[in-house]
Length: 418
Image (cartoon, rainbow, N blue to C red):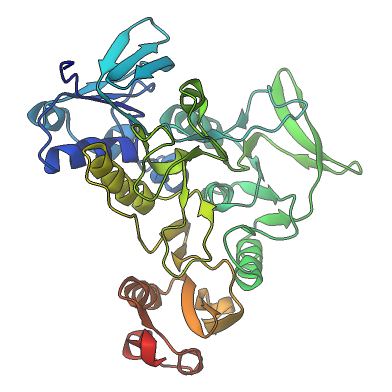
């Protein structure tokens, strides 16, 4: 029998750290090696768009764990090494980094995350043009924002709106260019989309929907304008391109694993070879939401990265459990805090609570008479009520929820009786 070389985790991110943590919590005493390509110890990514660009948070403040924690847990943390080649067999395998360093393993976890989606735009190589995914990106963006006057954000998703809000709060002139007919259209219904358009415009940000970008132009190697189809030119000292991410599947493909908008895994996080696990942003999994509309999906959130990693770590040790959770998300856009509970896909009814013009409201989603999700803007009590109801298999009747002044937590009932 081959010696136990332990577990190799490729991807020093939220899910990678959680896989390592869970293995130790489950009693695994074999070697664990966590490899990341960034020079930093694993850190939180959400503040990169929510806070770091404004200079209020330093990368050193974002680390998940202290260096001595990895030592106490006997976890070998390797930073600054990008794995470029993988080989494996039924006993394990070997991973090789771009520097030629080799890591042998008995068990393998892929927590490779996602990379920014890049636009093939003329002028995107100009100075002042940014993408935002890691701490290095954030530091460069922060430096340019500090001296900018005109900021253009290409992409009206959560990352784009968070950066736009921070730049505007710092006194910049901000324009958001969105190719779709509404903001954050993949995540929320029209009512919430319209709220964000109006709210950002009230605060001074120019929102341009159905925007088609022709090219970026500049002088002296520095961006100065964004040119739209039709000839409109938008001044820009800084351009942030935030049009989503793509899962990193290159290593999975080397191993011949099934890939389709992510690394395909089963309900316990196992890949198609029945040995490797994948967790977090890189994984395409059966919908874990009991009230979801079935099918497969990828989830991009901190709660999912942690909970999925726990299930996948258990599977790596032979303890297969089905992954189920109530997805939840949040976005901080200056003084606007959005919290989402559940998944709204397939809704057939909505209930609005509160007045969007007051910057405090909730939009509840129903399907077949049962609540399935909620978008809550500066309404933490409604968010917690819906999240708790969904997590416990309960319901909130739509007719009662629509009554002004009612508290949702007092409306929660047994789902079977609804």
